[in-house]
Length: 176
Image (tube, rainbow, N blue to C red):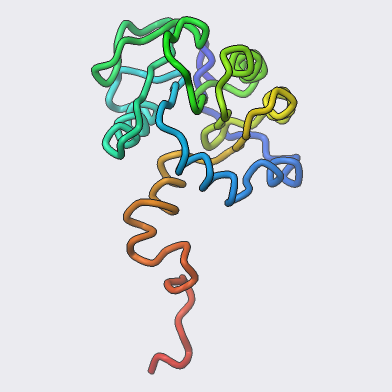
């Protein structure tokens, strides 16, 4: 992890059973299909950062992406806000690109602003944050990339047959 709390270390997946509770494919699809505004906490204007690429992808697929980062003035041609409380419009999903120890506070903010879902990106794991958000009525996803899940469930990966049971990684023994 960097000094400003950005994720750069391997995540702790020691509580895999608890994490799996927050990776329900039906919840993921529901969020992806109903969300329109995504506040990306930790969104960087640096095009080499994963947060920037995910935000760009989500914009290209019709989502309104709101950068939330006190170190940025703008990103992806949108004004950046220092906190979720400063965002002047309703938020459907809070997508988190911060280190796990910062996520419980972000979960509290998400509940306070009335967001509908808290999404912790791949490598961002905080069961405490998930419990806070769930208790506040939010849908929760932990340790999943919103871009990858969109591609898997609604994008080109889905169009090509992935996640449908038609295309798989195993060779069909009857195909010869």
